Image 1 (cartoon, one colour):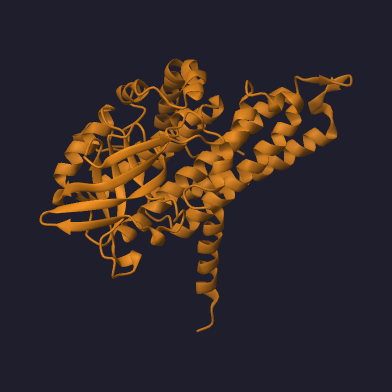
Image 2 (image 1 turned 90 degrees about the vertical axis):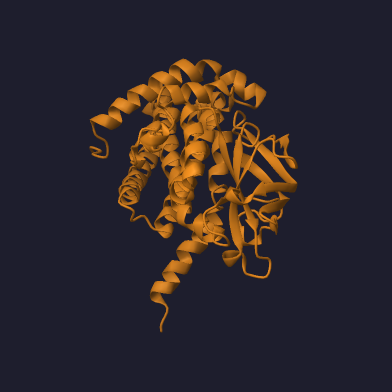
Length: 388
């Protein structure tokens, strides 16, 4: 079925992304995986090439193009090359963080941080997750206490993407301990180098080896009043407003990864000889590919609708949760079943299917575990059907 999601501008951007990845990412990917960290220079080059910063307004150096489909094009080219571990930080620093700044930031905050992001001089992060809270944002214990015109922040965060490289981080903290977290949480911008703000250990993970992931700690970190992002005590609401975009980023990324895994597998099985024919000539192989491709096509139709809804400002939190849950579960299954068709070679990290197998398991966990997504969807069903 012909896909009508993209136009000539999207395809031109695809060419730029493909050229950049082949030139600046693919040749260095293995080294970055070994070092568990991407070269920071890659960010600057991505900014210069217009690969990041596209959605940031032109007045701050960006492309001024607010169209989620460009995110999807970029994800597809990354997935085809199997280098998502090296570029996953873009989703935070170039996707999520600018969204908060553009919606909530003061003029001075936008000028400083958006300009830094578009030039590649700055890398951003967002610190929500805590060691004892996980997906439960209402359970955070990091606190910000008013001291004159300043705020004093104390607490710890974990699993922070871009935690090592970040130049600033948006920190979620309790500002009214007497109120519910949904009514007493605020967002603060904390810059690297601020006394008391420490970047902890670079975390070793099951997959996404090249991704920069770290623990962060805040000990009597003093920030000025203008470090507050958005309204006081409204941080939880601000987070809820932006979570649909984050979850669609994950959902569309899983679609791209599942599609790439199918392409690698189809190419392999119709080339690999076994028992006087190719692996693809066996009915079981064709049935496996037929089932998986059909289900990925169905996921694509839903994700494409969600992308268009997001562009129109109509994507609901529930539909974004569906895209994230459906996509991540299906991607995990697709990669697992495709790896089996590679046989022993599927277990070798020189093949992208093996890297995908270890990298993609996190998709069902971050951005809100899939169990949380089901709960959100289930609550919506109950709300619509509960007898009054």
